[in-house]
Image (cartoon, rainbow, N blue to C red; front, side, top):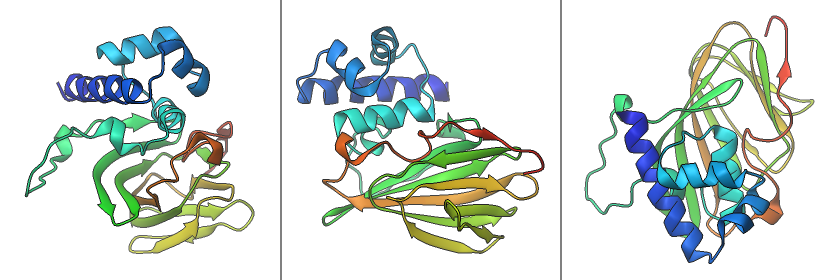
Length: 206
């Protein structure tokens, strides 16, 4: 039921955003490097997207990821139940979007992030900053070539334009990921986004 509801929300948002950008399915397929048939399934709510798919659409449409994932409602109280959250997965990371906040000229997106052992997840860079707070496990994270090791209660923030990666040190990791970037920075020209770029690497004893 959670996946069905999340699929309906993404489908409605994708149709609306594509129409607003005046893009055909073929043009969006070209910009996002996603098959036209897959886009058609996403817009009809019959397909579940991966992390890579959502970030590719975000780049192609020039909108924050949350514009695709969050139901468009106005309310004074926002209550998020863990059981209601859709999971976006890659080879090493599971993301659950908790909240989007528009703060003056910046956009802030908050994710529940789970990192699996035995994999390295890399990004070639994207606009803004990443903020990561580890709640359990040990995470090796940060700029490629000079990462940091974070344990429970540790926090790091770094400019996300540079190549960076995520890797567990021993066992799975749970953490909070906050993406912060200028409201007008979600443009394809800035490059591809968080966790969807460089081919993931296998690693032994991560």
